[in-house]
Length: 466
Image (cartoon, rainbow, N blue to C red):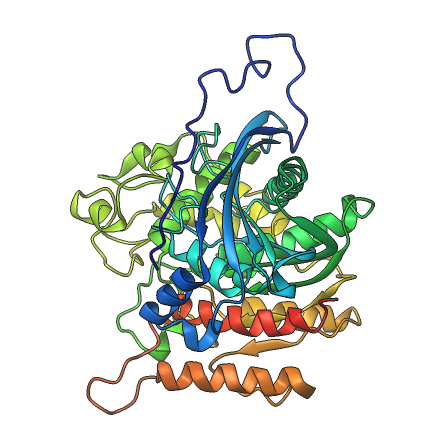
């Protein structure tokens, strides 16, 4: 989706962190605004042209509102509690329709995994997930706050705290604080008291963690109306254990992918995760050279995020040559057996402990929640969602969960009818593998499900909007 941008994003000032180092002055408070500006505007016509061209319009519908695109650089804290900057996009509906003005519900949105260092949700000219969220939610009356996370865009942190539940939730809270402060200062939009939280893939994990942390630590500041984590690795301990359970690599593709030991994308996700947990907890390894096989070696520790494409990492030999990014173990793989094996033999293994700490099957939501996923997802296996649903049910909280490849009869009422429509549309658009020559499989289910799940989530949230 392509839209005109009217202003370029502000660069990080050289003196940005004055007071945060080399000075006895106290650092700015969490959520303090460092820089903020209007970064562009997407008109209804431009939004509709983009959704028509991309095929999203069948799910998004025609835009109700224009969308002002704002950018805020704010102060937060890294996992060690040190001051760091991060940035967020803020999409603000505008226009004459009643849905576009007055007090609007806020959606705090967490994006999926990216290896791109310059990733910026406010750059909807080039950012597909940013344009999806703008068209699906902001264009229909939601103020959307979409942080880029520590370690991306203009963040001062030199790594990303990937799947660190506490650190990422804190970053999201600070992004929300900064966005609301900017809107008030600029008289650019009025958030209502209603707060919705969602996100996809990594963002599903971040969304659930943020819901948990807000209800635990920030209930006097925010009230979660409802959340909808999508395709997130919620049962992270089980998920990482499965991936690490052996050096097998998938031999084929299609529906059998859900049974693979190594998930699609593992050689990208694992360096992000190991670096994040080593920098956060300090006990995964003594040296990165103890982790990565030759010729990849210690340089892999600081490889990601990067401004190189995934394809460049393959062609330049920075990662094992496997287009599905599954060659994690064994001959020619990324990870040494001497690092993998202790995950299962050492009760104090740092990686195992980190996975347990960051799993999210250990709390009970007070606000409403729904889940969405694909039962054939080759990247984030579906049990992450079904295990979460079962866990919450055991705590007395019924959480509807849509499997876009599955049966929707267990979802009741009008939500069930909407779920059936979304699942039917997904399965028609992306048929599962069959004997027919040329029939697509399910290797792309992780990314393909995102807009369909977003449509389901918008319908779910709409029932709560006042």
